[in-house]
Length: 543
Image 1 (cartoon, rainbow, N blue to C red):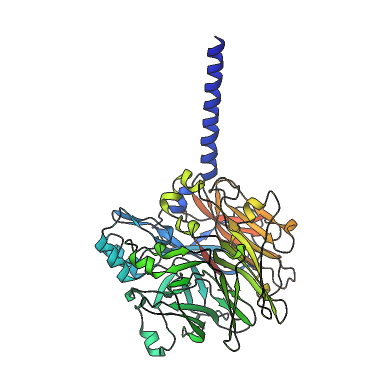
Image 2 (image 1 turned 120 degrees about the horizontal axis):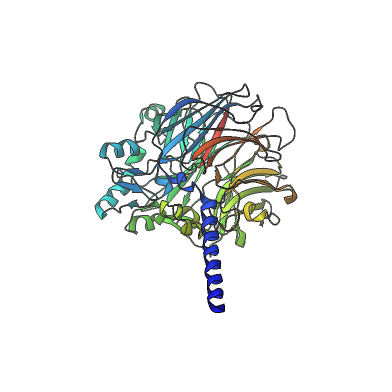
């Protein structure tokens, strides 16, 4: 009887352990699958209602636009990587009365989407990953020849002077641009403007980028040039049989690129940079140890973009410092272990004095987190929990006089370090752009160090980690935050954070407005639908 009693106790404990394990998984990721579930429904200017009394600050007036995938299948086929989902734009318009917000969301009518609808399958355009079911060799070759046409990453205005004539771009990491109508989220023009094209050619070019089997690499994160009313960005014209060309350009509201400087890349290893740094006098390109290799793309047999991403950590990082006034290029180099990997999201950069520059960024040691963003992984709790959250926040000190490069991780203290040490999708107070600053806000996945579905909004101080904060609610999944400053305030963190959050328990998204200083919820308003995961966006004031 004693043996039977012990056996029953063991069985009971085993059952409890199994229940706790299952509950932990379910509670951590309830509704998570909606982040990767298609939403074909489109709505326009639906009025939202805030849930808490008191509304929101009346000075919040403008439009928040978010960009990301909205649909993952067509006919009997689906894409496997989130980057390949058909693009969808969402917007929240703030009337400025402290209570009125309207919501819209629409699929991007790109060539990739329209052709897929026409064919009732995933049309043959270059993809980041594979399809389910997989395709035959002939279809893969067709994809390679067609080019990439899916701008799901970011939204930017081409001028600071926002008006009815402003051009707004949706972007990815290819030099393949669409302008949009910000009021109704429809696409207007499709462009791939190159330096030296005349205005007539540019304005008449509605479809060109998709005809290029060899794309031009670029950044989805252009930045405004100080007090000038133009963006700084770049595109790399790839040459599969010779030297590729790195073009640093200014891009204004006329969408005509003006060359600042250029240089040849004497290797088939093209440095991959998702973003870059910018100060008042310099633009900074961090050529890390991870690359886009056209050879791997062309001869992998899959013709998937992810096959071109390779890392070689024995190589040094090269940093190109371009003087904005002259185009002069100064090259620095470092073998620092903290510079190994890829420069992902620039946080802020500024000049300390005439010879020293500080540049902060989020970095990844390799491409694993990017290539791992597949539906197969994200919809399987064990697979996604196995993904290592190993990003870091890094500060670069560049000495233009000596060529010295110092690299320092910006670490938080326990227990917030589990979330904040790999905080990403950074936003800052734009009044402190290119200035000595302290704060940025972002999101972190796997913020408990265990469950990938544990998502957090973080406030990170690069001046004093004791001021770090997080906002977290189980089964709620916040997207990239955006900081809106309180008018006329001199305090850097005085303002609000606006973001979209998926409530996994209700199966709906809500617009969240948080106090940026303490990350306490000011108010929130549910949308009538859920939204799949998005990547980046912008708030356009008074629009």
